[in-house]
Image (cartoon, rainbow, N blue to C red; front, side):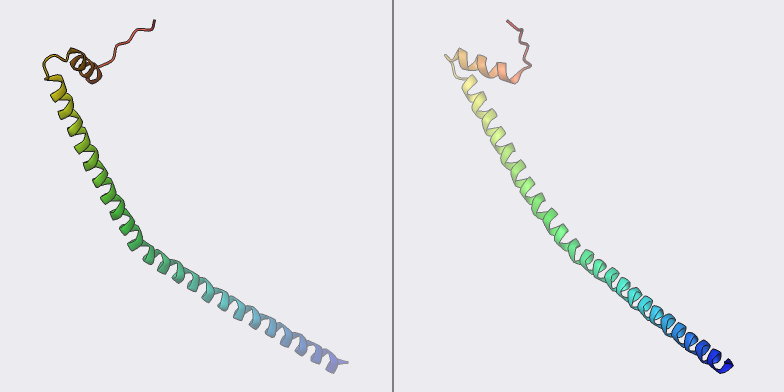
Length: 109
């Protein structure tokens, strides 16, 4: 009877040791996978930064070109407006251009 009890205790201890070993192996694999995922995310972030910088440079160039274009058009419009208002014999044009450049005070009818 004691022999069976010793055999059962040894078998239970062996099963317990196998279960603990398998859990430790599983935890080690999960830890390695976690560190690997962290490495992958860091690499993706590292690869993304140059792309982001390039996108910002391209947008900056687009914005600069747009601003220069708008400024040139505005200057052209002001020169044309000044040239029209300086023409003798065009009182309606000079009145209309001076009205658009100043503040508007309209009263409701």
